[in-house]
Amino acid sequence: MTVEAVLAQDAGWAPSGHEVASAQGRLALPATRPLPFAAGLPGRAWRQGESAGLLELGPAVFDQGRLVTLAGLPVDGPRLELFRAPTDNDRGESRGGYIDTDPWAPDADGIPGVGTPGPSSAARWYKAGLDRLHGRVEAVEVLDERALRVRTRYAAADQVRTVTVEEQWILDSEGLWLRVDILPSSDWDGVWPRVGVRFGLPTHVDAASWFGLGPHESYPDSLEAAHVGRYAAGIDQLAVPYARPQESGHRGGLRSLSLLRGSEPWIRFDAFPDARGRLPGFTLSRYTAQELAAAGHPHELPLATRSWLYLDAAQHGLGTRSCGPDVWPESALAPEARTLTFRLGPPNDQPRNAQYEHRNRPDLGSTDHAALRPLHRRNSQRRCNVALLAPQRQRPDSPLFGTSGPPRLPRCSLGPLAQQGDRRSI
Image (cartoon, rainbow, N blue to C red; front, side, top):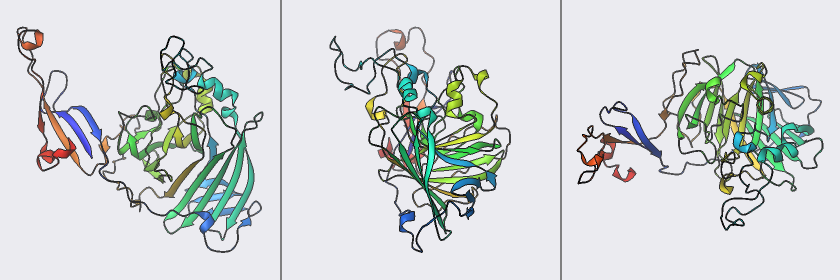
């Protein structure tokens, strides 16, 4: 349910209906459902598929286990991605970090929360080779032309740490399923900037409509301004134009994502939570994380030749280490096993997912992505409006200017839903 506080009448600084504050709360846990898992499929034994040539599973075409076409367009991926273009805070060293110390441990002056001096998070990521991972396919297996299983091991050339990724593509009556299991070796330390997969898409895949957190970007320690709803934006609106190119544009809490070519829907990804109830997030960008990291200014970015879709199981927090404390441990991303599960299907179909109800589908008729504003349509089954009555302009002799008596504060009146018995939501 969404609670919004809005102005009931015009004020000198905003018109009536202007949102002053809002919050959301879940009234009930979503229903769960069993998800397909390739290891449990009945049928003949798995067989090696490296020499099987082309394999078609619904909208996807694979060549020796490698995705080459998706819904009629050339695509590559999914490829493991652990790197993000460092933010100013990721590069910061002005304050200590919390990676190697208890954040509550006091420093020499007895002050807690200062952290331990050390290299920046970005320096650690570059040293670990997260920006230059290479994959080696270890196994490709197929089952009765209904499922494909690919196991790939990733590592940087000069590192012993590895990450094993197993893709499972399964075709059933509901559509094409993708499950990605990510398993790091036991010798990782520190934090990862992200953990997820990356797809390379044609450049004309240039807009997204999603059901999840929005309308602005959201990270583990930067979520208060994000609400669950149905939103849409062009690819250039999804990123933040910082003076120095860096990570931006991640939207978490993803339930469903539809990708568009101009104004035409292309394909939909329905997301499912992992075993701990955690939902993924997405980023759609004209540049890879490596291209953003290599550019010191926007004009140094290369000519975009692809659109890049990142589907992240998790992201590291942002912190404030360029001028303040590091990412707090509860928002830090420790290396660990993660799972991503998606169902792929036509974007014009309503998803058959009992967990999520898609409402307020946006009108995406315009091809002008500069005018394709994020849709702030929150997908709450209940909404309670709180109307704030703005105070009259104060006279110099009013209590607000220090004379006797309390100042005149805004008064609140409950909107119609609250008056009909939803007072508990306030």
